[in-house]
Length: 392
Ligand SMILES: *Cc1c(COP(=O)(O)O)cnc(C)c1O
Ligand SMILES: [Zn+2]
Image (tube, rainbow, N blue to C red; front, side, top):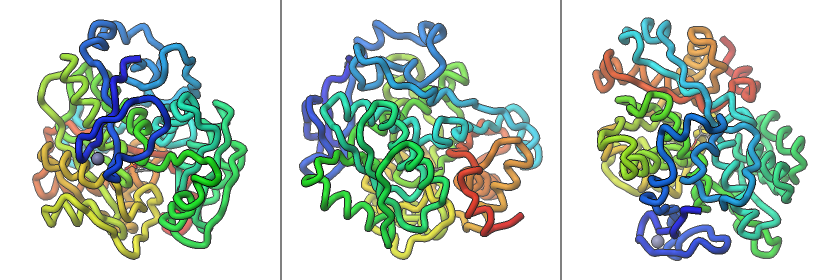
């Protein structure tokens, strides 16, 4: 294992890697550090070529003990699809627009990546019971990998959670509790009961290892484009693990000499009904605070308060990117449009990225000749209620 220690994203405090840990003493998220010069001696882009086609191909930059067999279900290594017909319809040059289709992951969303790593890590560190609040895909992904490694899963969901999300938890043997309230109420219950119940909390960015799974999206985009990053990445942002993870991957790859110092402009796409990062980006602040009365059909984006807000905002600014909010009616219309023009089974969050791309092409923030990667973070079939509420 090449992990050296953990450091706080905010205050820089160091922690050893032994034992289960959630946040820094200061209340902020922890970051996993690796001995990258040792990794570099053992791993190279050329050596990756012979490896299995799942996210464990990046084993040396993942935290699981090298003696532990990864409990893979085939997560990661999703297609990076060239979508010229859509590019053409948008007035972009051909060969420049790609969709990273995360809907083909096990569990139907990229939450599988984070949980594929965080769940076996929690087990390795001694956890026997996991708990998570979830209004969408995180609960199912946690339940799935808990079933895979044989530990208990407790999922707390708002009672109006989409049927598909609840069903997959139950199918995977998780204990599901429906809460008369919002995701923040679910989080409060986990917080209040976890010590007494012996649960380890795997909420977004409240433990260090989901980001490690999610960062493989950054490694993959580089590998799939022959170690050249795109000009722009459009990412539908909730808790922000993907944004934080990909940026971390870029830094790691640069330090190993796999890529240069150039970076994509990172764009955070949110729903207008829940846009704390957009509001903070526009206000020029680094603490996004709480977005009151949060509502959107794009359940992955319904995160009114993100504990990693300051990390995301720093990335958006450093990369020369931006943050943009989309109305539900528009993102749903674009989910249909993206499906019809590409064959990608598009989720509302993916539709939001297409809406954002249209707007940023119109303002000139994205140019027709830019190379753009747009994330479809889940499969549309899990969103029956959302599509029923916004018929074509
Ligand atoms: C969770 C989720 C998101 C947001 O991801 P973060 O990395 O937490 O910002 C986007 N889309 C879908 C489908 C999700 O499930
Ligand atoms: Zn700290």
